[in-house]
Length: 111
Image (cartoon, rainbow, N blue to C red):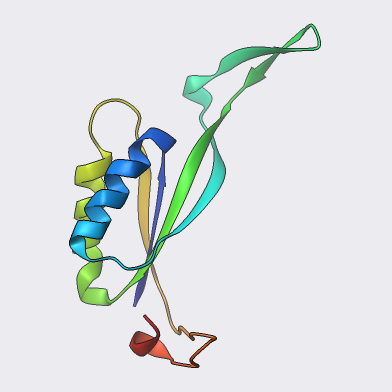
């Protein structure tokens, strides 16, 4: 099994979610995160003082899948999330064990 993690700008996520749903993905965990982007520094004012902001809001998608679907899912995410400006990052991590708490299923059966 693999854990696919994608960190994308929020405006890209609806297209990626539609593509994942078309692929047949049944579950995605979405988390709000802050990404460090030194190239896109913006200046804001807080209580009359200027300060640099080098963190940008991003959304993190986590998808647990079987080994043979991982490469196809990465292609789906790249195709749907890689149009226009603003990038993202996708990485794949091996998963040793999965346990579904409610049903106590283990391994691929828990997906």
